[in-house]
Structures are given as structure tokens and as C-alpha cells.
Image (cartoon, rainbow, N blue to C red; front, top):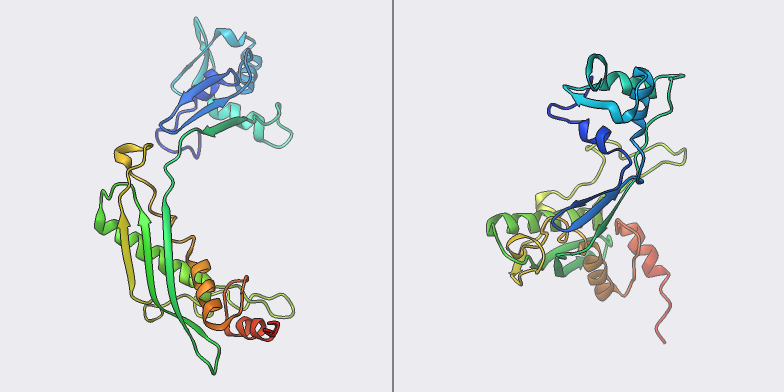
Length: 254
């Protein structure tokens, strides 16, 4: 049909429809549908062709009546009948479920060193250590780059990136001229320590590398600021204004 990606096949969807099927995957199993009923799309085709769903075949993007190839309807036409305004049939919906039965989690430990300007209250990360268990380092250079990029992105979230509105609700940081991103000079030297404890799941014992280095950065930076100033901040980004408010709100230590 129009707008479909090259190689995108709808045949299996129509054939299996809402009958129950298990789909084995490397780390999960998927189940879809309800037993004993053809897909709604196939039922729509049967109605259009005045035939039983059991007598229909699929070929070249069309639904055909078995033994009568001149009686057919295109899959794109079936989609139109279900989606156009005041269409002949209700939209076709699918339901499915998935269960992840095995995991290969990535484990990280991050340490941030910060400096807070005593006059402006502006925090800055001046050193960073990222330890990550990657299972098996298939591409060591790529892993180090991935960790560096994740830490840089996390520092942006922790200290700089935020949407600011004026009193009327207008966005004041709607372009890269106004939206604060961490430039190269704001990213500290990053030491990476790669551990290789093979996972029991996944090929070659590997573990995910892309997302884990981003997640703990803000917490590590906030904890470092707490250690330096005694102020606990739980809202990002940690701007000088928010740090000043947190310091002012501290209860005096008895």
C-alpha cells in the first residue's frame, strides 16, 4: 500500500491475526491474539469478496479467493476501508504481550568531583570516574567513547539543560542560542574503568553499554555538591539559583 516501507510485509499479520502464537526470541517470548478467530482484516476481506475467511489466500499484496484469482482485493484497499472517514469497517487493532525472561544488566559506579564558586554559587564538574561492567569488551575504543558521551550528556542534564518559561508561559530557551548545552570546556577529564564479568545471557557474554553511563551522572553530581556544600538538591538542572535556595533552606546544624 501507499506509504509502506520497502520489504514491509503484511501477509503474516493477516494470516495469523488473532490466533495464538508464541514467538521465541533470544531473551523474550511474545504472544499475541486470541485463539480460534481470523484477523479482523481478513474478515473484512471475506465480507468484501463474499467468501469465507478460510477460503482466502495472500499473494503479491492482495487477498484472493482460493480457486478464483480474479476475485481479489488489495491490502491497501482493506486498510482504507478501515481508516477512512465513515469507513465501511471499524479500525483494526492488535493486542500483544511480551515477557522478558532473561536479562543482561549493565552495572556502573560513578564518582564526580565538583567545585562550587563561592561568589556565584555556580557548580562545575572538575573530575569524573566511570566504572562499568560491560560483560565482554567487543569494541574497547567504542565502549570508552560511549561512556564519555554518556557522562557528557548526564552532566548537561545535571547542571545546564532546562526549559525556562516567562511569566506568560512563553518558552525562553527554545533555540540552541538560549538552551544551555555542555560545551567541551565544561566537560572534565573522564577516567573510564571497564570491567568484564561475562553475562550468562546474550551473545559472547556482552552487556548493554549505551544507556548505563547516562543514568547515574546527575545523582553523582548532586551527591558531590551535597558533600561540598551540605545542600541536598533534587531538581535538575542544579543552577546557582537553586543551589542558593537550597543553602538558605538548610536547617542549622545543632
